[in-house]
View 1 (cartoon, one colour):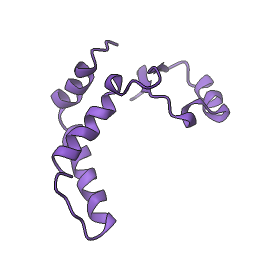
View 2 (tube, helix red, strand yellow):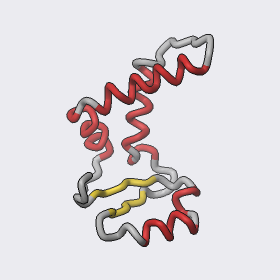
View 3 (tube, one colour):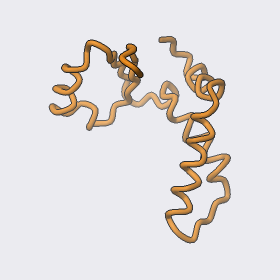
Length: 99
């Protein structure tokens, strides 16, 4: 990000609340802002929209012979979404959250 400020939106995963993570975050406050989502609120998590989109596109009806095929398909979906500014922000807009 070239030193620009950033906001990280986190769900309630326990690893996000570990002592090591809290210590690391304390050293990053000059550029990183963390906003935590409430527990049990998947409708507020834009990543849920990302996975839902991939599941209905690249992974729809996929019956891979090997796990690598599923990995490749998921990676293709993430690349597709990541290359679309409009699609990325539509997932955030869907949550109704504002930064």
